[in-house]
Length: 480
Picture 1: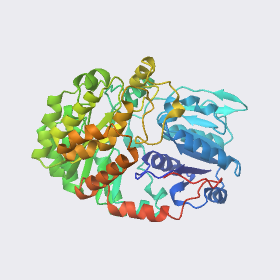
Picture 2 (picture 1 turned 120 degrees about the vertical axis):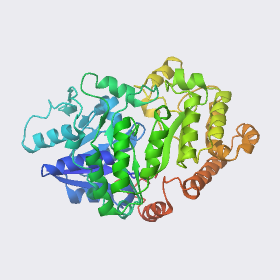
Picture 3 (picture 1 turned 180 degrees about the horizontal axis):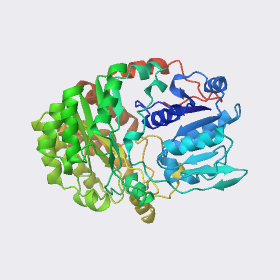
Picture 4 (picture 1 turned 45 degrees about the vertical axis):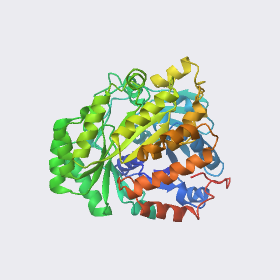
């Protein structure tokens, strides 16, 4: 059977789609991939392939884009549309939208495989676990299957799927997941809701074997010659024994620089020393808020300032770059609270600072709190695609907080600007502030060598984007 995945490029590899492809191909199915950022006429390409199934992986905010794209393609081609990803996991009612035929919740590899094989054999498709199906106007809802316990049983991501595009072939970062699941209950994150959803259906945190991960890294190294690896696990160092074993194997067999995401309360000198010796160049971790009450009572981070500063000092001792994540525009947050976050970042002196505008996703504890406090109307369609296009909540000083967001990172790099920034956020000069943020981000990414991205990746993408501005069947310009 022919299955086509459609994606909109976001400077990262779509590992979810690649995993789905590898499972489907292992059973003999034909899998295709189209990235609308690199196609002149998406409708014509779809008609050439003539897939029986088109799949989309969607997040909240981007779900509107893919729904419109799917509706446009339905006008010129006949296919079964299958939507998965975080949005469908938490909002399976998305299936009620016109043109949405199937929704898959949670881990999708084997649910999608069951669906495709049932379709191919002409069997019933309305009783497959993890799958909701709309058939003749009726919606069939099914329960979740247990989590995949042995992650080594899943084939490596199918990177050959995207290699048709120059940008993917020449990406110098390659993304890898060494495990799944997060045991923490941060109120703004989907993980606590995901864990509730899967309660009683398996172990939340699962790691691939060290041997399995090393084998994938060797395959990617030999086929694509990356300059660095980026491990995108929620908390890479969740298992200390695994981490130390992995670092020893990586140092011995791979040696390519890499970066990881972690929580500072798990950081020890032993772990950081092992990471450094293995080749870790950048650690990504979250402060989120410099206010103790907001960080631990509202966000439920359960991380002290002392733990943040201790981890910060260890990273500096071993000369590992720090990429620090924060949020602004949080429920109950005042300007002074935001300045506490700014001052704590200044104290840490990270190599790169990221600040997101808080989004009150329904289904999370903090999203519900925002609704109960009257900050947000619970309209899931009000979310933007980007964290940098403004807040969806209504709160005192929210416009000043949005402006502070754009001036935040440059102030961390140059603290003497703080008095000026306190004045500037009173002025409605958002366009100028966004340009300042963009310029500083480029400086942080490229000239401070954080390992996040490099010029060649931007150049290839922009070169291709210039000739690919009319991908939708309606010829509507695509906002990249």
